[in-house]
Length: 72
Image 1 (tube, rainbow, N blue to C red):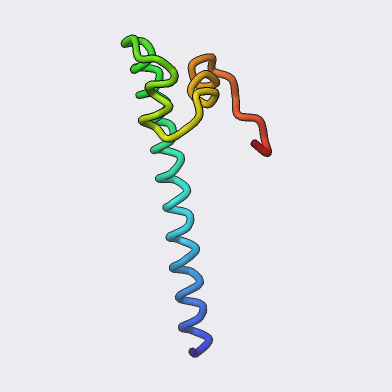
Image 2: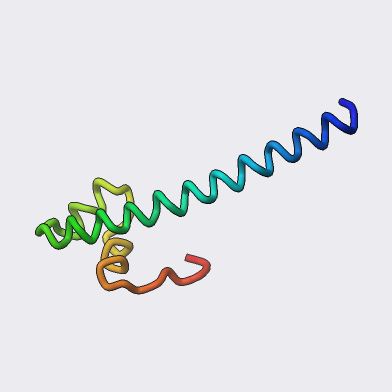
C-alpha cells in the first residue's frame, strides 16, 4: 500500500472512531433519559435492568443520579 493510501485510510478510520464515540455518548444519554422515564412510570430497577442488559445496581445508580466510578 502506498503512503498516500495509508494516510487516507488512517484518516478515514480516525473519523469513523470519532463518529462512533459521539453516537455512543448520544445513545447513552438517551437511554439514561428513558430509564428515568420508566422509573417515573413505575417500572422496577430489576425490570429495567433485564431489558437494558445491565445490573440492577447500574439502574439504581442512574435513578439516584450517582456518577459511574472510574474503573468499574
